[in-house]
Every structure is written in structure tokens, then in C-alpha cells.
Amino acid sequence: MILGLDTSSRALGLAVVRGTALIASVERIDPHHAASDQLAPLLQELLRAARVTLAECDGFAISIGPGSFTGLRVGVAFVKALAMATGTPVVKVSTLEALAANAAGSAATICPILDAKQQRVHAALFVSRGGRLVRRRPDRLTTWEAACSRLRSPTLFLGDGVAVYGRQLRQALGRRALCAPEELWYPRAATVARLGAARFARGVRDDARELVPNYQFPRDCTIRMRPARRAAVAC
Image: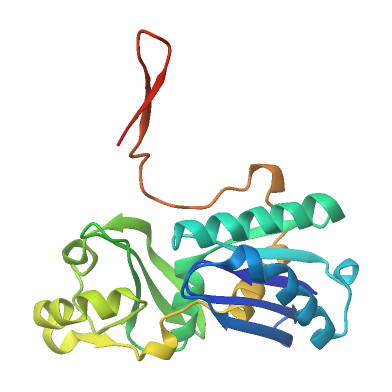
């Protein structure tokens, strides 16, 4: 039984699955990324709905990013605290893979694309084989132009990057650009839990102490010391 959490976007979610079967899930739209105020009560709500205790969960799965800086930081910290307090194993799940799973079964190539600001996007590439996702490109920080380069077959784009760059993608690719409806733009906690369960079944475990969000952006700020030993932050 796996508890999955997703805090990578404004759609905050938690779910419990047993294998591939969903036991219960709770979701909230969190436009201000105030996950730190909502995760604990949502977890209690989820456990009541699922009629399970935290001790009955065999593992935790957390969407690791890319995504909201604040949301990812809060979600990862929350799961680390749970895992270290209970001794329950944890696995990380790519947010872009969880997002692509919304379109599993599509005959088109699947390109999850998230707006990363600064004229850049987070993107990856998958195809569906027998209902299972097969990765074709890794998660990367790039531009919308690079994300759609070398695409020769119909491609389904999904994620909030569609709202920002959908017009450009359609202009560049013509009929090959398929844009998913908004209800498929956000990862689902149940999907994170199922992907986590699959990783657990393969014997994968991640060290909770070393768990960090996948922001993808390089560090933009550095700390320099002035002669008087006063730190100056330059961005």
C-alpha cells in the first residue's frame, strides 16, 4: 500500500493505492502554493477516507519535480519528515512522467511541458507502448523551440506550458501539434502513487536523507565575502 503526494503545481494532491487500485485520494487547488498549511490536515482527511493508518502504508512516493519551487520544497520536506519519523521507505517520481501518464494509451508522442518562466520550459518526451510509458527524452530545462525540434509525428502536449506556448507550438508543427485539455495539465497523486508502487516492485528505494527537489535551474545566486567579512548576495 503506497501513499503518493504531489505538490509540484497548484493542484495539491495525496492518494493511497494498493498495487494499481486506488483506495482514496484528496485534491485541492492551491493557487498560492500554501502547501505547508494544508498537507497535514489533508493527510488526516486522506487516511480517514482510506480507513488506514500511516503505519499501514508500505511506502511513500513523492513527485520530485520539476515544478513549483515552493511546492516542491514543502512536499519533499514533508515526505522526508514522515519517512524518517516512521522508517517507511520512499521513492521519488518525475513530475513530468506523472504528467505524461495522464495521456497513457495515446497513439501520439507525449510531450509534457511546464512553464519555467524566463522564456524556458521543463519538458520530456514519451511514447505509449501497450499502455505503458516509454521515455524518449530525459527531463530537461529548455525552450519551447528546442522541445518541439525533431518531432516528425503527431505529438500531444500537456501541462501548463500549453497555456503559454500552445499557439507557437501549433504554428511550428501545424497539424502535428495536439494540445490536451486543461483537465490533463496537472499531475495526479494517484498516478504518483502507482508509479511509486512500480518502482518499489522493482526493488528501488531512495534515501530520504538525500532527497532533494529537481528544480533543474542552475543556482542563480552566489554569496561573496566583502573585505569587512560581511556577506553580499548577488543574483
